[in-house]
Each structure stands twice: as structure tokens, then as C-alpha cells.
Image (cartoon, rainbow over all chains, first blue to last red; front, side, top):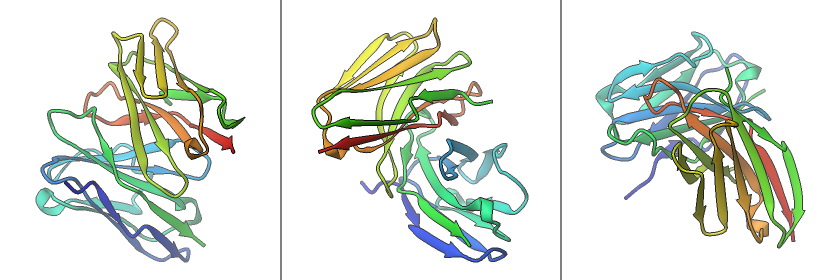
Length: 114
Length: 112
């Protein structure tokens, strides 16, 4: 069974540009979470989808971040326009609705904003 | 507010030695989990300990949980160079939606 995949693995963009990160959860996992780790700091929750619905987006830093999960399968996280402080590693995780404690993480996307 | 805080922030040991990392948290928890992140790679789930458990083992890993002190420790015995990574404790938020609150992590370097 394939694990959680994320694309791209690394993105380098200029300040003011737009970047879209993609996460493909494990098939059948209705829960999908986005987290990020800014350099040297803790990993912080961004938002949680159950199928295509946003269950909790309390961690989204500001309205430059837009997450979608159309059809309840893969999810995208768009940053527009990107700022320097957005640099970090963005992780996606998925889990089954009945087992939210067991989250499977993807390899992360390392975003560098110059 | 941050759920988990870890110490030390950085630890450097020789191969073969044991490494101990500590995590403290602020609110009641149902379980506490430990994750590892190797450089440039994703988070790997190491072990989960439930609030009614005091100690758990998995291979060379030993986790303890003291709910009265709101603290947990991760012990890696007979460390190897491949154990070099960042280690994070995490606990589910009280909302019970699965959202995890992470500590700042401990960066472990194991020198060959």
C-alpha cells in the first residue's frame, strides 16, 4: 500500500510568487492534516480536512494560505503571495476516521522563499 | 499554547551510548507520541503511549509517561549513527479530532 505522498519535495521561489503544494493521502483515509515546521521551531498544525470539508483551520497563519481537497482525495495548499517567513517544511498526514491517533506522515515539502 | 516542550534541544553522543530526551506538556492527554525526522525526510511515527500506561518498549526505544508530572521521556539505547535525527513528542489536542500538538524537538547527533 502506498504511503502519503507529497509534491514537490522541494520548492524554491521568489518572494511574491505563488506556490502550490500537493498531498496525496493513503487511499481510504478521510482525515487529512497539514502541518509545517518553520526553521528551528516546532511543528505546527495548519488545518484538518474530513473528506472534502475543512474540520479545523485554526492553524492557518493568514489569508495568503488556501487549502482545498476537492472530491475528498488529494489536497492542495496554495501560498499566494509567498513571504520570506513562509519558508519551512510542510508536512501532510492522513488517518482513518476511526483511528485519528494513528497519523501517517508524508515526506514533506521543503519550501524556500528568497 | 504549546502542548509539548522538549529538552535538551540538542544532544550529541558517541555511538553505543544511550540518549534520553524529555518532553513536558501542559494539559491532560489521552496519549503521547514520539516521532523522528531524519534530515530532509518525513516524520516517522516511533511509539505511542497511552495515558494509562507508564512505560512502553519498542526495540531499542523505551518511553515512559508520568501523568502526575505531565512529562514523558524517550530513551534510545545503544545508539547508532543512523539514529541521528530530530525527535519530537506530540499529543492530540483536546478537541479529539486527531490534530497533534508537537514539541520543539530534540536534535540528536550520534557520532560514529
